Amino acid sequence: MSIITDKMVEDAFDSRFDGADNFEIVRELLTAEAQLKLAKDRGDLLLKRSAEADKEYQEIIEDLKSAYRAVKGRIALHRWIPVDERLPRLSDGYSISRDGTVDVWALDNKGRASMGNFYPKMQVWNGFGFGDDDVTHWKPILLPPDKDLTSKDE
Image (cartoon, rainbow, N blue to C red; front, side, top):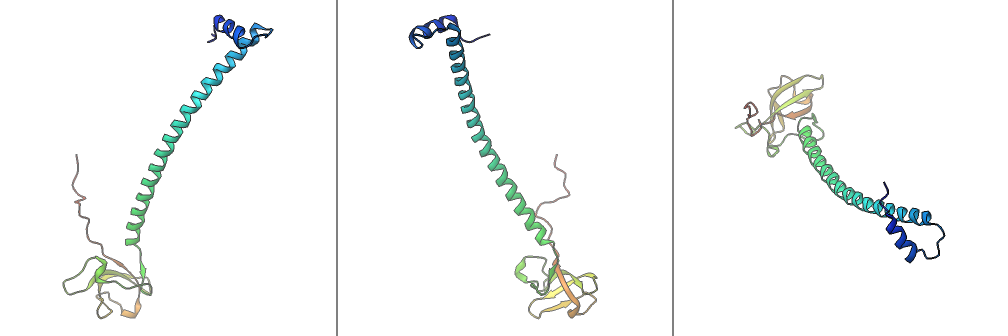
């Protein structure tokens, strides 16, 4: 069904296309103009939706970047840190004993892991079952999360 009526064609034929020879050509031109306007309107709507979608996409990307940074930070807390990179510090905020030692896991040069303490003031490893010179890597014993992970939310 054409959206162009005979009356529209007659009016256009008389005013816009004066001297045109063919009534059907005028109808086709008007139909093409109407389709072009519809296409432009749809294009404008798609551009608007595209801009909205782009904004939403950018928000999603920012959320993902933020989540990635948070996960990357959590992963960094669990890695083995070479002793030649740095030693544990009291200011790291890990598990700290009352005697001024930092509770850590240590890895020796034979690949054995053990839990013990590091005395930052004296630069001494303690309680690992192997000598200070054997420690190659360490990682913190993390404090439990603030939120109780065992509770079930309903």
